[in-house]
Amino acid sequence: MAKPADPSRPSADSARETARPAGGLQDAFRRLPAVEELLLDPRLATRAADCGRNVLVEHVRGALDEWRASIKAEHWSAADVERRLGQGELTRDIEARLSREGRRGVVPVVNATGVVLHTGLGRAPVHPAAAAAMAAAAQGYCILEVDRESGERNQRDDYLSLLLARATGAGAGIGVNNCAAAVLLALQTFAGGGRDVIVSRGELVEIGGSFRMPAVMERAGVRLLEVGTTNRTHFADYQTALSERTGLVLKVHASNYRVEGFTAEVSAAELAALGRERQVPTCYDLGSGLLDLEGSRPLSMLGDEPRVREAVSSGIDLVLFSGDKLLGGPQAGLIVGSRKRVEQMRKNPIYRAVRLDKVTLAGLEKTLELYLAGRADELPARAGMLVTQAQLGPVAEELARRLALLPGISTEVLAERSQPGSGTAPTVFLPTYAVRVRRGGQSAAALAHQLRIGEPPVFARIQDQALLLDPRTLLSGDFERLVAAFERLGPVQ
Image 1 (cartoon, rainbow, N blue to C red):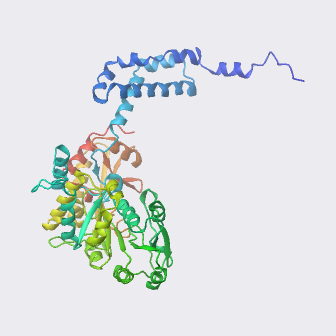
Image 2: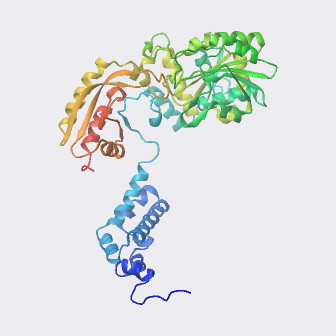
Image 3: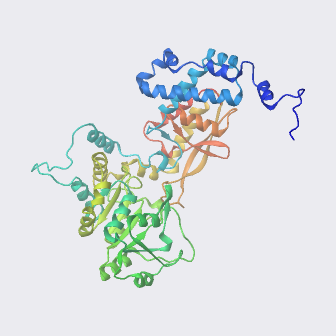
């Protein structure tokens, strides 16, 4: 039998009502202005010209939803809402939402991390001449799939193929939208429909974004046939695995890790010879794609990072590498090798789905022209690798001096190390000097956040509870932009 309620004790509902501020939640909700009323606010009305009325309405509604949630969760009273509205908080919240959206997307930044090929910051910056060629192709009509002499239709990457052949020593070349697409196209062309692809267990890599070689093989419709062990794979392992089902023998450069100690691997030249003997296509996925040509200084600091020309000269049928890593051009997956094998890939219908657009083609053509003209060291990525610690010292000292003039900022120059980045030569570090920056009363994380959302956005690295600025990755004009970013910092957060 239910126990009768004690009239001297408040019910749970009445207790909750007592806990609420006077006026109740509904009264607080009613104090919120309508969307149309907010759109008449002069500070917001002018923003519609920048983002469009519909986007402005979306942010107004989003801010109102956040206020409703706060009213409910924090038990704001009607008086609380009136006070906050009177202080302009809602309008500022809407403006903050608009500002956050304005900081999204692809925008230029100052890279002070010292990571030359920073995936998060777009990997290799292209040469100014390549950037100009890309802009010209984007801004107007251009010759893409028509022959200038005859006026007849041709293939869009004929000139790129010629330049790749000259630069790498290969018979021909084509480009697709990234190296993952190049791998997919090679797998599907030669082993699609369930044929075997032979690859060493020690080369079943995973790169950023959970790109796993076995998963790509599955999607390409091929059958993965692993040979050897994680640390040792021998020539006989490939010999034994070859059969009438074999569609491709694949070698993959372990670009973002190293296996050391008791190890063995089969060279590209050995696999090329085996492929010719058994009439099976062979392919080498280099990943980063280091190209050293006459007139440029070798990137010897990268150690045993494989060179494209050496891979091609091994006799392997196809060599795949990225355009936006060590090559220093725009994002692309470049495929070079025997004319026969390249043409087989070009005829695959998937090629059309992953081929390059006119803007990327223009940038790659100009980048390769710079290589062939002996001007490769002008490319920002190569220049960032080649600059020495001694050359960076005076830049770091001047940066530390300039920043130390600003209120509340202390600086110190340290001997440090930079990294190539993007999974390139993961055990290689480049000697540098960095500026350690501290700002009174502010954590390194908070300072880094302020710099990222500032103008221009600055990305640095945090180490030992301090912000580090590495001048290795400062491009032309970035020094002054970096100083300006610190000058514009608001109050300590």
